[in-house]
Length: 383
Image (cartoon, rainbow, N blue to C red; front, side, top):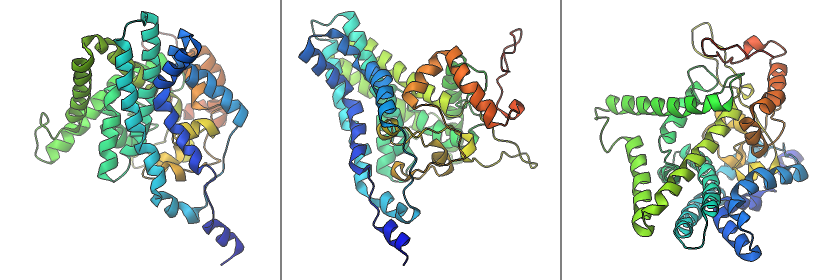
């Protein structure tokens, strides 16, 4: 055995215990309440957005990026280490504990409408990141993890994501057929309804086809979308009975904020990237060049390495702790927290991202996934 092989076998994950930082996210509502109590400043009810879109970008600037990959020789050992699974499992009790606590605050005396809206926005950040936790769990073969994935989606009422993402997006990514792949020149605000409605239609079609192949009715308890939505209905119904119907507007708003956050991530992950058709009419295999990557340390720790998106699409069953960086993958100029804000500000997004996309295709923008403007509108997809 060479010295290199021996070193790889004894390799230890330097970020092993740092993955527990991801569990700070579901406690954001509790953090907000504690900060309000400690300082008397009611602005801290808005702690979730401040943490996500101000504190995280600042920490990313301070900590930089980490492009190191675990040695191939330790991949199996890392995959089998249950510590990493518990990091995702524990998100759920913290997520729902914070949601129950938020319901108590929404119905408590002493909070203004502005305070309640701030807590709703903070809870919406938790719901959005919970979809990412569901994403990590839902790709695994273990029945427990798949069930936990559907439970994590209940807070955002986005249970159909489990079907569409795994059986739709991963097959059609970076093609015109995928509603979750954004196009060059397409604003987030145009993409959002297209992805939400397109993903819903796609999920229903996929699930109906699956049930038909198995000789089952679409409207039945075997429908994974209906059972997922029933979890959301049961959750919201239980909370409404417990705390009163006054919590329902806040529950619905935080769910909308949560899935809008997820759709913003969808927008930036494949912006303008296109898989080519082969001579046989099929699309080329998904490669690292079809996903935008980012190696910012903090966001990768908080999002279970969602930003290493190229390896995820190439190996969707690979667990987050073993995802790798590829030099050939196009790189975002910042982490997801910063890029999400840019996506909402279309002129800034295009100023930053369009030149990068053009450079990725060597100046030949016809190779990109172009946005076709609506009839009668000027074509602004060229730069």
